[in-house]
Image (tube, rainbow, N blue to C red; front, side, top):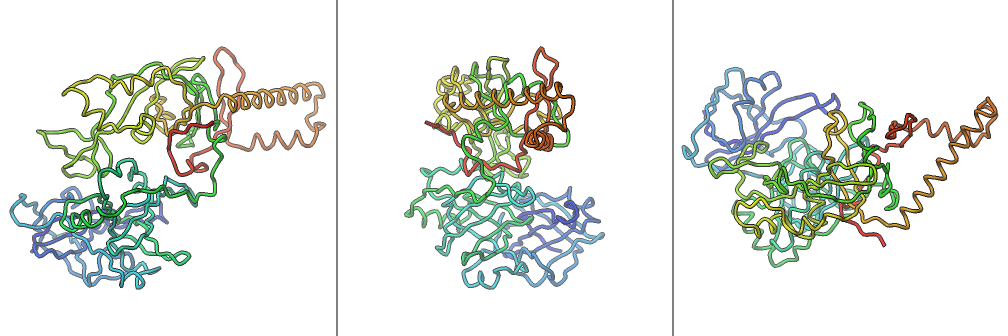
Length: 488
């Protein structure tokens, strides 16, 4: 029998078999602060998983102790424990036994060279954040974000955060005027590329920011004398598009956006729309309170903020922007949503600062937000299942541009010229009656046009169809920033 606390838990999956579950794994810590890797094989997951939650204390009986083998071991221990059918699990009240909430095995400099390109033992790494990149799409559609830290052994290194870990790591949360931001990333692999050592997350990885433990406190004090400037890491994605291409990517009117017939086979589209903000819709408020770790909304219960995603109390919840704006163009009106990463750069101030200026319990919209009414922008939208399958509005804005009238005019002329070209081709086809007599260049152009992933949009009041080329998000990078951009 052992008395332990569950530090962290994750699912181990087989990426080669569509993410098929292999096991549920966890790290236990006991009264002597020893760490133990425990595994629940997939056949027993339904029996035990619902009884387990990170941060809780347990009395565990009838476990099997086995030698640690294979790759991707989250600890350097010689043994690990396995749950059996006869394993008994009893949750203990907090305070029953004194056990730390967290435990780590931070990699030391002398171990790094031994673990480079060797996935046998995974490594926990800690340091002060000094660089953040944007989400990139690489390979077969994999999403990643690179960050840089100044490690506790005073070496600057890059960590690649894959998938949801990269998406949840919001760089706008970590302000230079709030002192060092100490980042812990667990269970990473170590690679060496062009002479530089890099870390990379795995399915076992977790991220902790300014965790309230003594070692983190000592690093905050130590790094407080060092510059806290967080640099932007340039994107390495080769599929970058130019500023002009991005601003006119799949340009639509609002009416076309609302009436579009979307393909059910595509999970996400990127489009751009130009329009003027006519109103701030405050029906749902202009902010939300979030967990600092996962950025999901948290609601207080008896004065305590519990995160349903992280399954633990949120000591320092954040105030984040979520502004619903009514946007109109010459065709109609709809609702867009500005989340924190876009709104904060547009307003040049944090939601937290605006929130603190308002009277207690006030539901008024700050004047800084109200001042957006009447302003004209180009909105880059990422349309997901919420919009595509369910047909709902409230389109999420991923980036804003200030319109460049010269570029807008050039784009309009190019569009008119292209429409005239295709109209002439249609007239020629009807007149000749044989498409094979067309110029070879025209035939090639039509074949290329039909080969891209087209969808059709019905113009209001007309029966004819109009083609719009759609580029999936996998083909486009934001080029290292989701920033409010002014082009002159």
